[in-house]
Length: 323
Image (cartoon, rainbow, N blue to C red; front, side, top):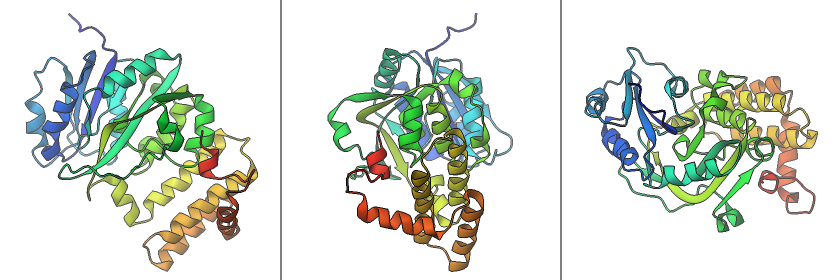
């Protein structure tokens, strides 16, 4: 007989994280919410990961274990594979090197079910290192928002006022999302990206329905040299994807004010300026940004001027625009 359809599909996509896998899988199996299936994916690991995964094949929650013969080249290809294999109403991409509190799923599923038409529900994250030491710094930057337990936002407004500026959903492991909404995204180009595809994915998902923020740190986001987000800062590919995403977002939000768009371009110029790259490499990125977004260094100086004026009433900034 076919198993009962679960409410949540937990997808663990893995590539060469054998040293973290057992703890990660156990963090899922220890969730207080139990109506879920567990889908284990391996992207042609070479470090013994498959042997670790095989130990869990027979667990009652494990519905599928898929091992690729060749590496896909992008973590987001594995995301999409997991979404297509999933049977639950919600999907949790539980990255193989991250961790979670036992009440993560219970909290997020409860709130997602409480509101109608929720596309994304995500909780706060704490950073921790390769040895499991938790950092004290605040990476959520909630400010006054953190005095509440949670908040629900119109998705399109959230995309325009929050995600246009930056990816506030800093780690996929801290979010659950609607599977059917993900399968009907109008653009699947996030799959072709290597570093910033999650930002584009969350933006498009927000356009599908409501976004719920949970002001509790229920997720642990591991930082180490092998992390794609770390690698993206070593060369220009990450910023090239940033430019592509901003261009695509503006296509979805044609009514964005011109001043706001110029500020966003200025922030991209500033990011390039601060990168540890040769001047020649920076010039190539400036040229790419200018061509892709019809922008120039004037936008950089506008953004710098705006930094001095941002405390004045009526002057827009990323922080003030955030819902």
